[in-house]
Figure 1: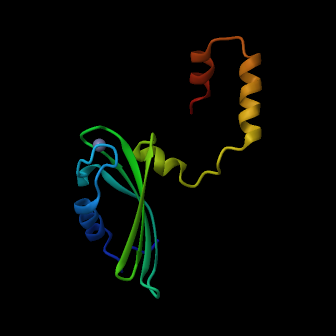
Figure 2: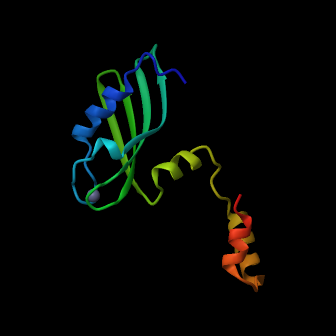
Length: 124
Ligand SMILES: [Zn+2]
């Protein structure tokens, strides 16, 4: 990833001024705002940034997909229950398939044991 030619820090600072929590309207605190992913095309002067922010007032988490095309900026916000580190962890994962859900459902139906033990044993 090349970050040299695009001043993301400036962009984030600027976004901090315009982005508000869609739930309570509170202005975002930059300390709670993280860049999860970014891409840029220097030739076209375009950039895409994925930002995760935690509202310091109502504690909602929101992801913003920001697209910069020359002088125009588009942003789409989405409420999420992922934390900042969850978003970084899951961003490159494949979506869960219907078969995986069915498999889990079936094994849970058969499962007759201690949930806490079963899940803590699987942790790395
Ligand atoms: Zn809020």
